[in-house]
Length: 291
Length: 303
View: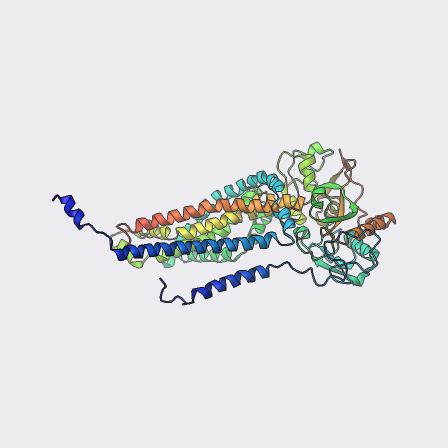
């Protein structure tokens, strides 16, 4: 008798009872799936009939889902979307740097840094509380009215500055939460190894802090992406504003729907990216497998 | 497998509840009754009555019986309204609204005003006003979404610039191609910039005229395009160092007009149109224009 046969003889064969159980479970699963599908279909049908059967449906379809106006709006909306994207990339980068700087200043230890800390706290308190639209109005229409040499009057630059003011305050708090969540023992260990305060911050605290707050940071970036449209109060045309212009010319709302879908289409890849970053982070933190 | 805390509800009950929820949802979405406050007259959606037949004074099929509800935006700008109080009868559009109401048999006491944002004036669904008066230009595209009365004002567009701006001395349309222009969203002023002037730089588009004026003051735009009465109001009351550069000639056969906005298929359209036509014929509109918009005249025509 060879080794293979030996093994084969002792190989596991499922008992009758087990086979029976698995058959039963498969049947249950099939039944559950069938019920779920039917229920979903019924719900969808009720919703469809309810909406398309309503007396105002033809009018709503004409006003919100008109192919003619969608084709008219798409190129202009996409043109506007370029502005949103440019603002997102440039403001996003500045916001991350400024926010991290503010958070570090707020968490500096030692009495000598009190004025810096106080300034950072005041800044964050003020700009987190100030409604974004008011901040933008003040920056866009107030700053040029000062008539100072060398101050930009370009509404896009000013609008971007307004966004950075508000969002760096938000992001500073996110970073601060990350910094404060690093356990004190980490700091103590670093100092006992002979690292200076600055080195501790740079090599021990910040890497852990930043890694922990990646998901909320990306959340703020998605939010920033949608708020870039508010710069349009300066008269520049972003995606939503391009849609509004066509809507107010034609009294048809389809351009808004087009712009909304364009934003959703932008946000979805960003959300997937967030998930991927988070998953990768978790994999790295749990080297050696999850427990 | 149920967890320890799951509510142990029999499956039948659950599915019954689900069906009930679905049913309720469907019921909640049942077609709404036409607003109960409507007068006891023709059902909504009936064809507009032929003019004259049912325009009995004070007995129209209005939103609220015996009351005429008129919509306009807030703020209501001069010179069309004064002091942001549409109900005071001052300003051209307020005066026209009361004249139309009187013509329809509704005295000053039977008129109520309602704030209706520009964007809501043409939203589908039940309207909160009988007609809306808000400097809305009549265009073919817009007619697909709302009803318009006949025009109550012939619009001319004009250019406003600061006296020291490069646009201040323009005498023809070509000179405006090189400057940065601005206009309010949803206005025919903006269409005129894009279709007639075709400037080299994209026009700035503002939510409200006062934002456009602020941008003009800051030098963020060289000139703005507005209708002529607004232009004269801006130069006389809002900006000291600005001037009306000129007005645009109306192209033959395309005289732009402001019209009253009514719900699509409103039973009042025919009566309101008849009233506006009568006011035009008996010289009332001209008289009111003289009274409220008289300084909106001599601006040079841009070639």
